Image (cartoon, rainbow, N blue to C red; front, side, top):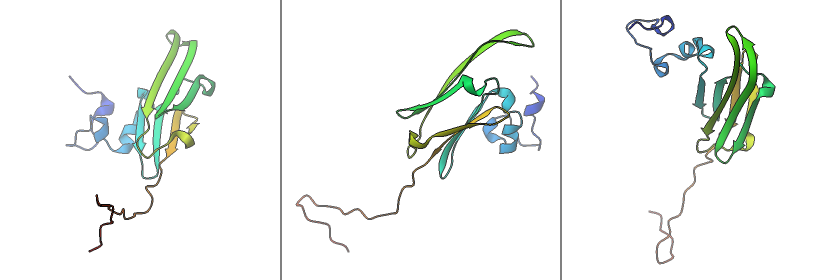
Length: 142
């Protein structure tokens, strides 16, 4: 069976038919047409990208509860090229450790990509932890 043209590698002999093996620009080339999402845990933030091009801003909601970010989109019957269509989705993403839901932000691009960002807390400076002994004394430095 032949692969779709968009999945053929641009640089032979590397097979990039798996999205995680493609360079970033290749993954985003046809990303909006596939209804995908992508999550990235960067040095200072956690970012989620979701294709929501079929929804208007008032048909979308983003909420944070416990350790989850929830994205909900719904629109009623709408006419398209093939008749009428209604769409609804619900996605939940667990916040990774070191990320709190208190400062989550979201933005919608003009091409229909919802970006949700949450800052990562810094681990803080390195510090020595004293070791106490069972007899209640502190371990002596060597």
